[in-house]
Image 1 (cartoon, rainbow, N blue to C red):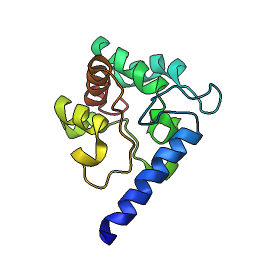
Image 2: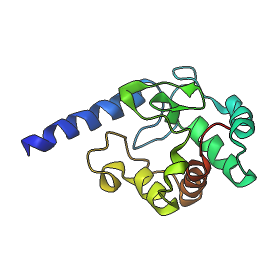
Image 3: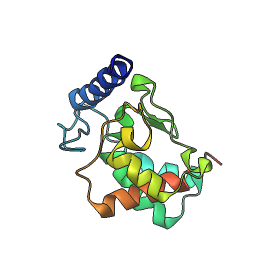
Length: 142
């Protein structure tokens, strides 16, 4: 248990940072007070142009831009690098698959042991699928 203690602490810190920033939490993703973190929805058209995202990915890009993902992650120059969360601009080039992305969003530490990312259990299946499509279609700036 001591070896896992750091993971629990890091997970708690990640959730606290996101919640304090007004972003997503495991109970209420993306409903934090406006202005406490920068909603990057206005950046979605730029992402689409730079990455040549297919139309099917745009709904997920809007979800990503509005639920607080950029409190910890960066994407095509938007967001922050809190807690050393990875840049997700080219995550799709890893070909992890839609189901992995959905599973990871629902329970990050279940899909990737040790992940400090908070779970997004309250996102409905439609939003989870949209977000997964966006992540899989994110293959880097072109």
